[in-house]
Length: 104
Image 1 (cartoon, rainbow, N blue to C red):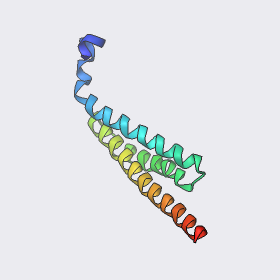
Image 2 (cartoon, rainbow, N blue to C red):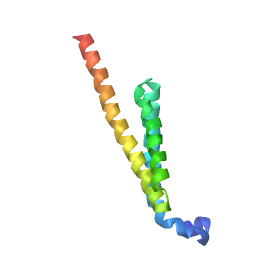
Image 3 (tube, rainbow, N blue to C red):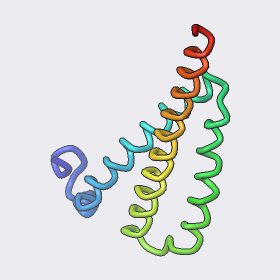
């Protein structure tokens, strides 16, 4: 498909397209979750800026070649997303518990 759409010059990127799509999906999920926290004015929205610091350190220390860059991207996005999901669960449990106390 790459050859048909873009020509043979771009066939060298075919091995990384699968991992790039995983990274793109993770990044989309991170942005979606961060927008949720921003709309709720939650401090959990600060997970992404902290993750960026973590990401920059990893890129500086280990980002020497394309496969390593892809692995760092996927690992960082996964870590941020897992933290956001944990924050989402904690935030919603706190909200549910406060409503439960108010209605009791």
